Amino acid sequence: MIRAFAAIPLPEAVTDVLDIVQEDLPAGRPVLSEDMHLTLVFLGDLREPDLEEVHLAFEAIRAGCFSLQIVGLGHFGGSAPRVVYAAVAENAPLRRLQSKLQQAARNTGVDLPSRRFVPHVTLARLKGRREDADVVSRFVATRSLIAPPPFAVGSFCLYRSVLRRDGPHYDLLADYKLLPSDASG
Image (cartoon, rainbow, N blue to C red; front, top):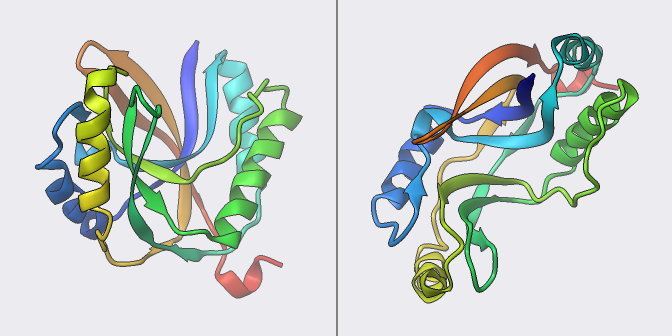
């Protein structure tokens, strides 16, 4: 079985800024800059033939290039935080791409959970301890004005996620180029 997901890789100019934000994280395990990405669809554990079908479906997707902007920080888990993340500004082309990928995966038979898409970049993973809630909330509030440069999205990628003791590591499986924005129809 191959644990896989589709995501947008981040340019170094963005990860450099996010690395600086991570330096002051009060809790959690930071994500390495080379592993930072914006997940579009988590596919879960797939057999190799099923993953090949998803790959072929992703190759057939037609979507145009667009730009993204990081607009602050947040955390998931409420009073027991599990993730500190960089938020992504609302973006219609991003939503359309994510929807196309989700539909393509479902059309191949992948059973995706019904989950609202919240575009974000994970900066750190936490253990979900209530004692971290106040310090994480303060950190997020005081760093909310982070401003990495907007960046162009010209592709999305298929990754394998390998779970290790020190956290997940990602291997690139495929890179799918987007069309020039005026050619996506």
